Image (cartoon, rainbow, N blue to C red; front, top):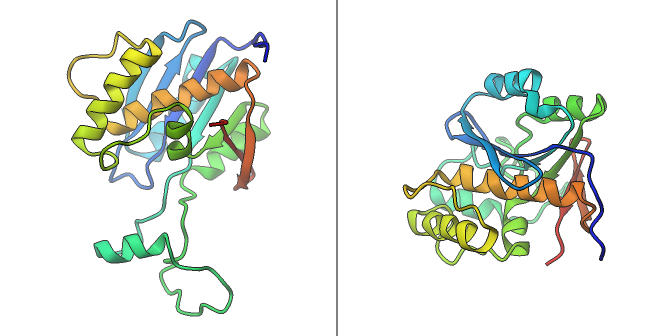
Length: 206
């Protein structure tokens, strides 16, 4: 496939956590895949402020990961069982919405950006890691997994400016989201997985 040109100057990736208890990160790439910004946020107000004030938001493509919702659960076995429980109207015991898989944190702000003409898409970070050959060979988001991912981004995708000290998992995932934003902008082939709160969730072919 012939790669198309792009009119955008910046490609943004946001690795979004399901609550302010965990860090979210944003990465900005230029047309040469150079990291212009790599920063962490905790509160939705700070992310909203970035959307409203950052010059990188103009003439750009933004990809935001869809966070998994485990904030309403207590106990390790309940968190894991949530991902395997069959859904259906017949399941009446749902006092804490424990069958809800995905978090809609920041969805309203993301939809507002889209409605105002911004090029905004959502993604599943695990699918992207697989598509880019950055599979988790260790338990996801552990120190070993992050070290392996950071080294892979340096060697395989040329991010040699990444520091020697280990970055946060959200920062590394934000880089992958930004890579996907550039891939979309230059006409890369994508598939729509589903629509989440009014915004398309796209996948990259394996």
